[in-house]
Length: 226
Image (cartoon, rainbow, N blue to C red):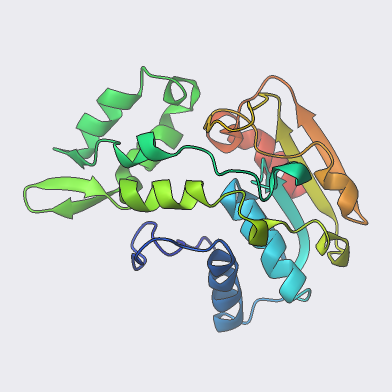
């Protein structure tokens, strides 16, 4: 089961700013609606952060978590000046077709390192019909506003992470970010994250960038199977 956060996919699009704790509320709402208990939670990037925040609030939902390069930054990043995400707001928003988006992206980094099926899915589900063309389901202004709040103080989960006593696997990419810049290829995950969970396990992947599920889905599947 996969959910689409507010502002993403076919979900409603709120007016920015969008506080990150709201995404944890989305996880909780879906889990409670479907009466999920003891499931394995798998989250990439902001999804990983949101699963941890949800597990802190309701420990019975999950039996284990697999966090794929989650946006849980080094602790001293929280409360620092936000990264400049203005260039994301200028991202191209309209395409004639899914094929046009695929052709534009497939030879460019980071997309050129993705598996073909992953990129095809990204292009197909990232777009919504709008008249005789398509627009991004997550509008650039919304995406930029989300990134701009990634290190807001309310997103610092470290003090409460020890409450998550289920097994937690943290897959951590090897690309190191530069503080104060927004490099979407770099890993946002603090090296210390796994150590804050009583049953945490750190899996460092030096040959991968942030887009582990798109580059190596079989690796993620193997960790879930453990």
